[in-house]
Image 1 (cartoon, rainbow, N blue to C red):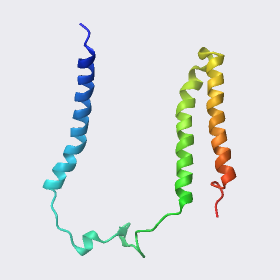
Image 2: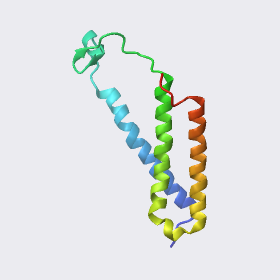
Image 3: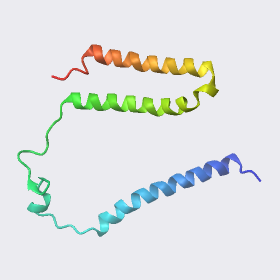
Length: 122
């Protein structure tokens, strides 16, 4: 007997609730159970067991974030292209045109970033 729409959504809601509880429960449990003994040595920043030279709160340049954003964009592009490349012969000419449109949109975005000087490292 097939489930009704309400039962299907209730099952999805229950799974979502269980996932949230399983993610939050260890954090809450650790908050109450973990020992708290902060001291100067424990709260001091360090790198590889050595004292950190200078202030650990360093502001990064915007170029780092822009490079990371461009990397994520083109990484997601590969996630879409790879499955398409596996089955492209069976999809036909329409799928080829759609992929070319997708690649052109990304190429226009890359050209825009290039023209704005985002890829220039100073």
